Image (cartoon, rainbow, N blue to C red; front, side, top):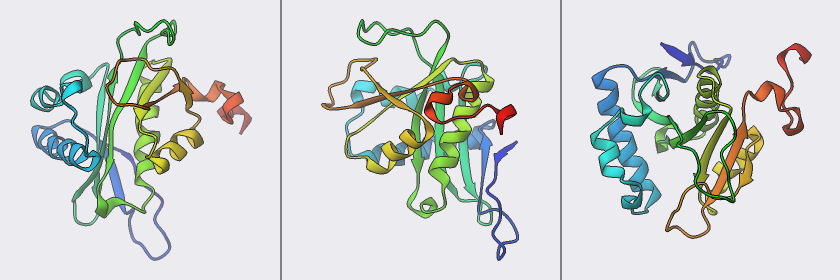
Length: 198
């Protein structure tokens, strides 16, 4: 089922990309490939996250009803050009970053291939997975990123994410941890307006 398609421009007959929920073994194979490309592009050894086990066990923690995997494809060619995942987050054991009272999700593996960049796809994927978290009843969504990922950090800030203390141990220095309270419609202090106010 398609979750999101951008509005076509006057010179286009259809949207540039579609975002769908991963449901088939073929989709999982594609997601596995995109996750691998994500790790390669990141240029960081993800052994500390047990990344290979994550790949081998997909959908794993991203399985419904508590998780989700989204796949973006080019509308004309069908080429896979992006992905993102959502999984439940275990209660934080960090005294500096306690878990909220409700369930918390984590956004992972947001990736847009070179062929998909410049289309607004990163934002579309992030918005779609946050919406999925809202629909699943999560009260907060968290993520981590790196200091030099300026475009990603700007996107998250624009969406209302705020920096928090680390919620898990990582060997990567200066990892940036972010969180967004859900549902967004009630977080007016971050610029969101309830639908009834629009």
